[in-house]
Image 1 (cartoon, rainbow, N blue to C red):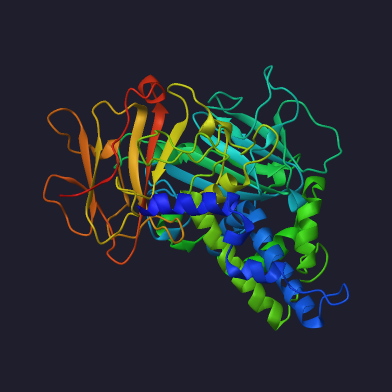
Image 2: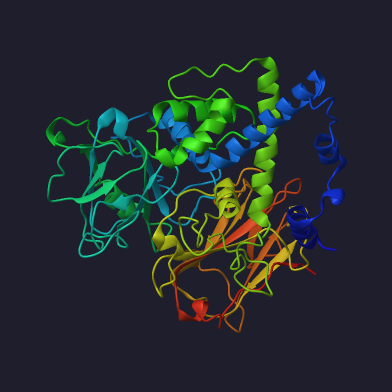
Length: 496
């Protein structure tokens, strides 16, 4: 039985197995004896500890998107500073020295963080030719206030957004804003005080990155009505400074969540899970002060929950019917149909957790299926035989001729422990169309993975012998052949 098959079988067993097949720990908890209708003091303490552990584990999984975003925010602000006017740009592309979940080294990134509680409604002047996303701090695409140009919009800015790449002024309102809405803006309302500003810029020559950077540096962000007195925009070069923008996978995650909860708007839809967090001592307006015993328990819960997140990222949920791009390949589709992880009458919680374990930001443009528009993301953790990819071994991926990407394609290797780009000693842990990779006589492209070079003239992404790795294959502007499945990538094969 392969690793992949074994994991899927265990998940299915956990969902449907009868009580007698459960591990003995659960049997023990479920059969604690009653004495004249009551549980003993010792068993009462045991169950209360179990309840605290379960609540802490579920709180971590619920908060995964917010933890991911807050880790990015606090990591960025520690290095580049805090404020609506600070928009770090990875001017020389994002390399593996920046620790952040599944970055794309083959575009130019700008990542900013707004605080509508502190600064009020914000205006974002978007320059022409930009492509970007506006998410709240639960990483949900921000919705437009009423129709714009005859339709509702969600998250996308610039080329895929209401300005159509022509640029324009976006107004982002806080969730509790009750004032008049001035005309002349593309107006959105965030469901959190925190707003994530995510710009992406494309280039055709990796030696010429000035133009996408120039476009991003035309961005202006300021409080509504305060353009003339606003802080001057700053665009630090984020490529030049290492930064840790990862979220915690230990008990300190609850301290981070307490900071988030204390500052954020109370959304009525969150009251139930806020009640679960409150049972742990995380309450808006109150200090979070767990004792030594609680901290030890919460640390174990966070470590358990983060491991569950890893498993959910590479294990197919039986609820999601489109979890694989191809039935005979190991390429995973992270979106269950839409960017909000919404099902017919429920949300796909496991898919959401798995996605935000290794990634950040969503928008309709990332999930929509339109030819020559947006992007598609194919990820795999397994070789063709269903075994985890191992940095000590050598592999080959074959992309058939005429890769169906109107803009470009790329292949990137990542660290499975934290989702950051694999720090493999190469300038970037990726290979893309602009690198002009060598092709075979039939037009196909072979990409090799392994700790040693497969030889001069071959396309090689180095791996690290004592680490596993996973791969994301991106297609920007996917064409008809992708959607029709007339073209599909090979599995990653062990090199012979």
